[in-house]
Length: 322
Image (cartoon, rainbow, N blue to C red):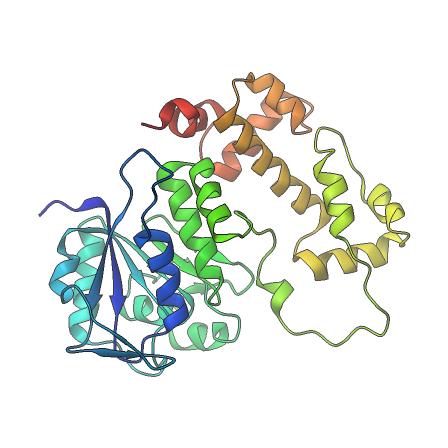
């Protein structure tokens, strides 16, 4: 049976993690009248029989059982009810079969333990909530666990970190399917940033600072307005009256990234936006994003997006939308 790339199966089970489940429903199941092209078709797939209890006293009725995964092009695994509990053999087999037939699998938070049980993550890089990363690495040593990132895209298997990082991973999947401009529209409806910079490091508890932290939000906005020019660490530090050493530490604490990595991330985000929404030449976009040569821009963009700028525009530019 041929799988439908727009059909999304969201797993439900007794002991369901309500928030993670809601993320998938919000992004893939909500009607999108703002778009004039076909959107995802979502089905709730029951792992267990009968009405299933979710956290908070909610009960969930599914559209069908695991057989409904047969046509899905994407399967979403919300946070699993108990990391120590092996998923049912029927679920493991259904996920393995779906992957073998070309479906994409996406886990949110502890849902990665279900994917780990299938063996599909062996030899792959994956992530989960920073609190569970050590356990995942210990129980499944064949997986390369990265506890620093919000999500890992390994092609047809995507794993996300703690609960809210599931939004980042799902929006990333939307961007893969429809382009960043559509993903940005979905993000705006969610009233959230379409691409959060940094990784989990910014959320891991740290000792309380002895002195109040400087607010870097104004500095980041200032830098975003000047992506077309070279910006040094010294210049950034001086604007917030810090030594470079203190600034680098505070910047990493606030964003989870170095200034160089953050600027590169913002330049790539700006480049995607311009490639999708403008008719500017590649040379002009390279200038607006602060690259000295077109070749350096092409290399950086290909490394970040996996496509050359011209190919990205062809796939995700305004002319691509139906």
